[in-house]
Length: 128
Image 1 (cartoon, rainbow, N blue to C red):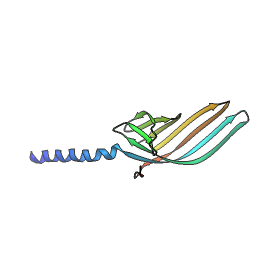
Image 2: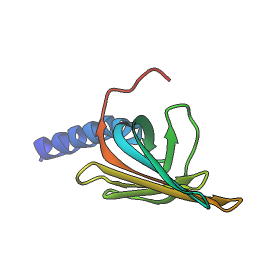
Image 3: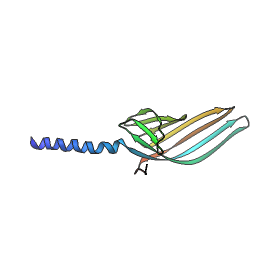
Image 4: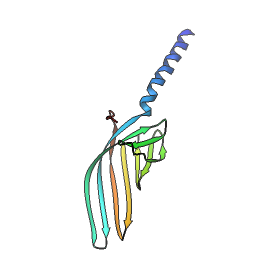
């Protein structure tokens, strides 16, 4: 019986050590962004590569950009993260690492639509 209780104590100690790693995860994301501008004179578009990172704190249920700018969480669980910031909506599938984001803004008869997608990987955290 002593061996079982020692094993249980060891498992609890290991779980305690693992939790902080899971609580502060850094995601490094590489995406392709498309910007479409539609106005009275026609449509234009451009594409660009966009790399950025997120800090995910599962325990506190927070998501921030690398510069500590917070996002508003809509869903944060083991399989999915949904959040938004300044009208840009982010969807991250934790199962396969895909990230999609989109926004649409209309001002003075001109509509700007932003869509992007790519992959995120858990990475070594850069200096904060």
